[in-house]
Structure formats: structure tokens, C-alpha cells
Image 1 (cartoon, one colour):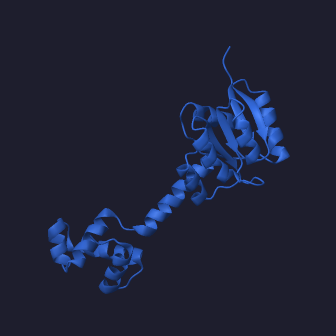
Image 2 (cartoon, helix red, strand yellow):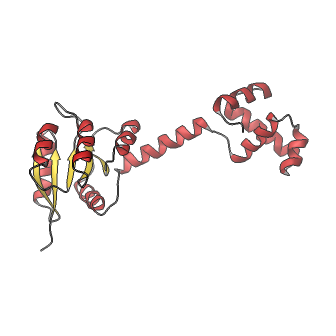
Length: 211
């Protein structure tokens, strides 16, 4: 007979407690070994029972779920930790991932997808709810663009401008036409929201775009 994976749930909302209790009761791969309503209760129970995975809500009375995570990671390093929450802000997600969580799932995840992602976690994966993953990618892309909105070629042109080269000299140096250089410079002005060479170079220095 296949051994079931033992899960502890740390959740203070009765409706979520009931949902997960019902879900694991009818699921053949998982078993609910403990249902705790506070972090303090979870810490005490973890020293008494065998648990392979813990699902943690972030908003708990007393010690918060976010505070519980490093405690569990330190005292019970073998246990997989999954955040199960309604919060999806990128800064919090990244912070918790750095604390060593094994998964970050949203409470509106369907039961079937939740079970599938928990299975992946136990196999060594680190899934995020699709919307959470998309948000991290979107925020990272936006952050990267804010720090460096220019293409590789535009950066090359910009650095040659900073060296005092004119259009023809830039064109000869990187083997493109002077007209193409003008197009790149126009694009640089637009992306950096500047109107002349001096403004552009000052803005580029502020952003750390010059070598």
C-alpha cells in the first residue's frame, strides 16, 4: 500500500480549515496529521508528530505565519513549507522565498491544481500559483526596464556618445550607417525622456548606464 504524505495545516479561518480537511480526507496521496489554529500550536505539535509538509497561512493570531516560517526552517529543516494565502504582493513573495519556503500558493487555487502542486513540491519542485509566478515575472521585467530601458545596441551608441564621438564616427566604429545612428539616438532620447545630449548623458549616469 502506498504511503500517504503527512501534512500539517496552520490556518485560523474555519472555512479554509474545513475545505482542506475535506480535501485531504478524500485524497489518497495525502493525510492531514494536524490542524493548528496558531503558530504557537504548530510549533508545539511539530515536536510531537511526524510531518512532511506544512501549509502556513500568513495572517495568524499571535506569531504570524511569516514569523513561523524561519522557526520551522531552523528547527525542522526536513519539513517542506508551503505558504497558503490570499496575499500576492511581489516583495512579500520574494522575501519568503529567500527564507526557504518550498511553495507559495493562493487560496483561490482550485482543489485539483492545489493537489497537483503539492505533489510537485514533494517531488522536489518549487511551484507558485500561476498568477503569483506571472506577477513576479511582470514586476521583475518592469523593474529591469526601469533600471535599463535601452537595448544592447542603444547602450553601445550611448557610451560612444559619452566619449564625444559624432554620428559618423559612431557609425564607422560599430559599422552601421549614420542614419541608423540617428534612429538609435532618437530612440534613446524617447526612452530616457530627454531632449538633448547633455540631458541624455546626465540621465544615463543617474541610471548607471554608462561604462
